Image (cartoon, rainbow, N blue to C red; front, side, top):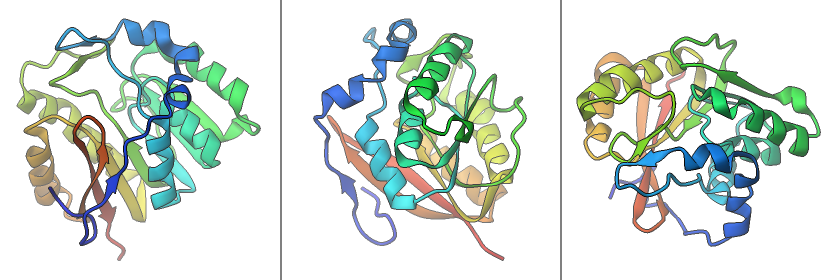
Length: 223
C-alpha cells in the first residue's frame, strides 16, 4: 500500500446506493451494453467518492478525459466547478445533455466533447485532471479499441492521455488517475518519470470498495 503525501489515506466504502444509482436514470441502457471481461456488467463510478476527491483538491476547472456514464459530470455539477468531459461513446451524448439539463443551474459551466481524447480540441488550462479510464483487464466498451495486451493499452491509450493532459494542466495543478489494472501502474510511473519530469508523483490514496482501489496523484511542478 502506498502513501499519499506521507500518510495512508483510505476513503471509506459508501453504501448510498440510491445516490450512486441515480446516474442510471440517464445512462443505464448504454451501461448494460458494456461488457466486463468476467461477463458481469460494468459498474457505475461511486458519486460520493467523486465528491470526496473534489473536496480534497478543490478545483475551479476540471478536465475529465474519459467521462464514462456521467457520474463525474454529476459530481462537477454538485460541486460547482467548470467541467470539460470527453468520451468516445457517441451513444452517451443524449445522456450527458439530459444530466446537464436536469441538474445544472448554470449549464454553460459544463461541456462534453464526443470523440477520442487524443483527437478532440481542448482549450485552456485546468487545475485538476481527474478521470477513471476503462480498465483494460476488466471492461470492454462500445466504440473502444480492443487492446491485445496491457503494454498496448498503455502505449496507445494511457501515454497519449498523459501527454495531452499535461499540456492542459496548469502549474501547481493535479492529475488524479483511478485505474485498477495490474501492471499498468508501474508502466505509467516509469513513463511519467522518463518523459514528463515536470510531473511530481505524490503517491496514492485508496477507496475501500470490495478491495482497496488506488487513486494515483501527480502535481505539475511550479517554475
